[in-house]
Length: 313
Ligand code: GDP
Ligand code: CA
Image (cartoon, rainbow, N blue to C red):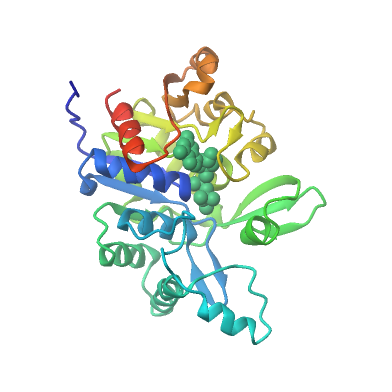
């Protein structure tokens, strides 16, 4: 017998693909309108003159059911615009497809007209039929920068996409974070949630920027007993991306224990994969409770099961 889930309000911190996969399950497990997503904007950048918010769009497109199988962009999209500008000699290393470009055109224009990223993100997700609320972490620019072992500071997308995160990293910084403030609704979503979930996202690149916005980490820490995080690291590796190589850069081991050590001040429960069951006692020794289960989400149904298990804690 399945226990009834009585949770009424859930707030989730989210990066891109890993988070979106989990959120698709969460919004099947509970009414989507009870879910508020706080999204990372550290990856935002201006590409070909357009303001791109990759993580917010990945979540919106995924919850709208239109995401491409790659996990970002829109399914069935075409590349005419990029082909056209490549013909003008523009280096098109950052792939944006046509319908997706429409989103960035709208966002760029609305920003120029004075709308906030909060208003724009809300307008896009409602227009796409998404009932979960999606909030950018901040309306002020916070820009993730990568300092390489050679001492070069790179814009995030240049490190991540152009150079395929192949360079050694000395440090990760969040430019503008200190002067930024949480976007409207963010603090209330944390304070008023019954449960707070940290999605399986890159702890350094996706959750890091959200926590760097002054006030957010402390406010979540006050809710510590109601916070659960899903480890994006399974058996010492990330399913995709550089999470395992970046954790040591911030002094953490590339294991669920390392993630728990990084999160322990604000996170009361770590959800880790069965493959890492042997680490549960080390995590508990840090003062963090554990849930050991299957955390690889091959399908929305598996993501829904994972969400239900976490909510039944
Ligand atoms: P982005 O898509 O590049 O913004 O990256 P995210 O911040 O979403 O991080 C990707 C992380 O999600 C990687 O560390 C993956 O290991 C993790 N991830 C992706 N899919 C899954 C999954 O099914 N289960 C778990 N536990 N983690 C996942
Ligand atoms: Ca991202």
